[in-house]
Image (cartoon, rainbow, N blue to C red; front, side, top):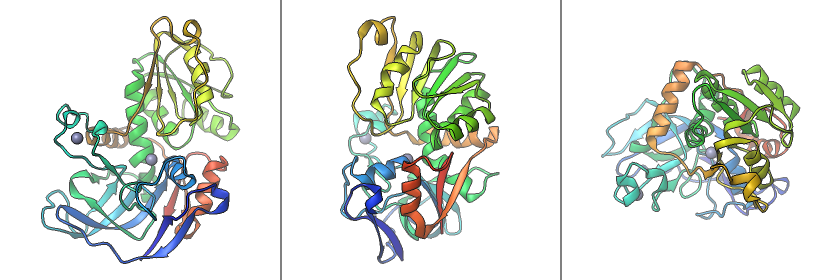
Length: 332
Ligand SMILES: [Zn+2]
Ligand SMILES: [Zn+2]
């Protein structure tokens, strides 16, 4: 089969991915062999390709927003069988036994493994995944529309929880790409007023079209004090202005797995009056199932831009350069 691998991490302009031939993997106990129909392109893939995230396996295949079809189910699988269409996401496995797993915080499991980082991901014709960590797909979406729901949607949904936007309250969103455009719709459906801050004119237009109350440049002042904020852009210099935009008692959640350094904060201006600064780490399977149910019920709109499988490198370059709004998806 054909698979893209991160051979030597480096600037995306230098083409850090390499297309290789490798054998179709064998599913082990409790695993499914899945034929990939399409795979979303997440910012995490870009961080991995460029070396911001250290690769956990040599020549790892990125991709953790996989829509596919089960072609073999090994002994020990109970949820899915051959012929089922399934979604493979970022969280690929946990130990199920540590103090975090036992408290329902499997996203914090120190022994968790991730698709397209620890194990081979979906920029390939086939992959294997644990039956227990694979999702049933919601109805009413095309395959390319489903892919971004599986990470951008699920992690964004956890970020929305972490930001604790109250119904009828206000939420600021910094950065408006694959994740933000999905989460904004959930927040708006919950009665939250959403203000968007992004340098991209096209993204500002997308935000307003989806029902955001306002859209402005990243460092512009907020139209009103915010109860909550989510930082999706991996840009540490946006943390102080996002904190300064919070109302008393407000919460800023940093959604990404990677963030450039945060400049010094001023206690009075950025944190006092019980403002909270939080990170978001991965997700639980419960977050994923809840989000996918909501996505179907609310019929959220997915702005998906398809690229043929051969053009994976171009999709990453376009993501880095903000050349599309919404989310990119590789189709096989
Ligand atoms: Zn654990
Ligand atoms: Zn992702």
